[in-house]
Length: 329
Image (cartoon, rainbow, N blue to C red; front, side, top):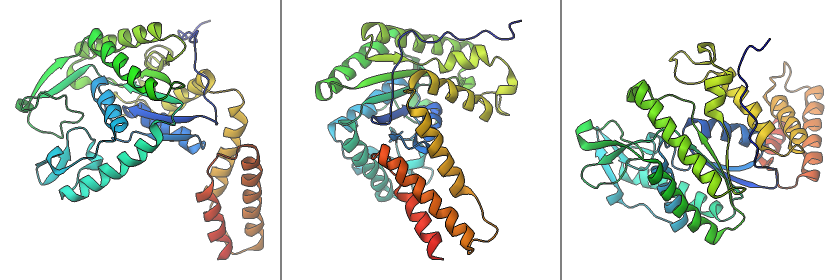
């Protein structure tokens, strides 16, 4: 008896391993997957602009990183007591322009250092609806709750998205030939757009992603996060209380599929070892000053050293420092 409709395994898939460097940009899905990859000690830079939703803002962010853009006071505006960048998530907003610029430019420097070394870009598109600033004509990455009259709302076309991405990829490949791209469409529904408009938006994104995977077969891949939620998990019990965002169980389910379909099989053992170390350090001992607990910490350090012997590029500096601090107590 079949109780759900399984999503077919992609015929052409990426093969991401611990030796690769990753950069993830886009909607909340990029943050969710990026957090799990970072916890597993993959070398990844996650959302250097904060969460972005539409394809044009994501590609504009990558262009700025590649060009080494430095933000200046003229790139910001003040609204309701805070200073904002139209390209950045509200996490970068602050009470003074100096603080915003410090946050933005510090993060951009880090991303710029990584981009030319990246092996895989993982881009998650959330919506094809964009808001163009009526003053500048630019697509806003984030509206920061400005009045709707400040923007012109429109839906991107498949051609517009695909042509913009093709131009972006040509520029990136000119500097980094080994770069590969994994596209996903966020399963989060943008109900404020209206459910019908949301479906039109997701369809546009899916068609654009399909075109890019066909044009750049073997260099651009598609991971079906949207389909996994819509078909394999077609039930509101897999959604949060807002009935829009995936529940923790659904996020974990999609993560398991991502591991199966996008990661090297050899990465699984290392990921399990990293998870064991993370859980061991999260353990709260009854007697933190006891010799038994010190031996326990010593075993963790030994596990880290063994894992680093096999994967020297895994960064356990924070975990080692935490062990040293606890051993000194």
